Length: 194
Image 1: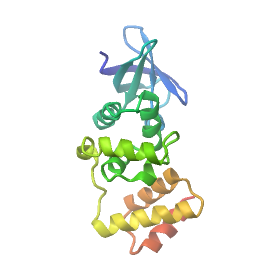
Image 2: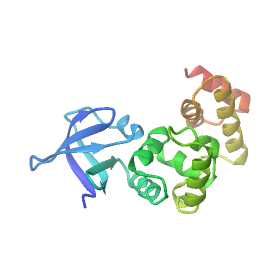
Image 3: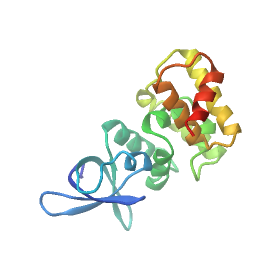
Image 4: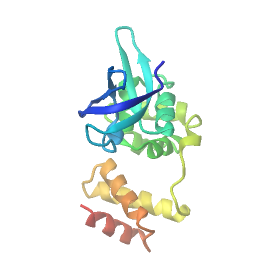
């Protein structure tokens, strides 16, 4: 099993990257979009934590930048009905911490934002994985009122036409700069990011 891959990043495509090792072997590694956006430019040294998935007719490598992402991907694969492609889509829609939190909190609205997941599948996946990913669901900074305000702000942005993922990202970026005085201020600042 290949657990880590270190080498020079050769290409960055939307669905996969290529990494050349010092021994001259080039590996194609599928990565979620949340990892792809954080990878350096081609020609730069990179280290990926990988999961090797063997199917009936293929072998694929999936790459992540940290241990938490890799652990979450591995746990997603333990749920019935979740294969590597759906797990990759889930991790492309949300960062690892946010996805783990959505699963642990059984946030069906968030899970349904993933292409290929409807209400019944979201319920089934959340039921199976909630306890298994609870340790990966690191709470967001702030008290309960901040978390509730953030959820309300995300819902308001979705009502204004944002996708769930964009709304969630905008609210998180605002919260990284400090906690606003009110939910309304949080929404205003998130709108200003657009």
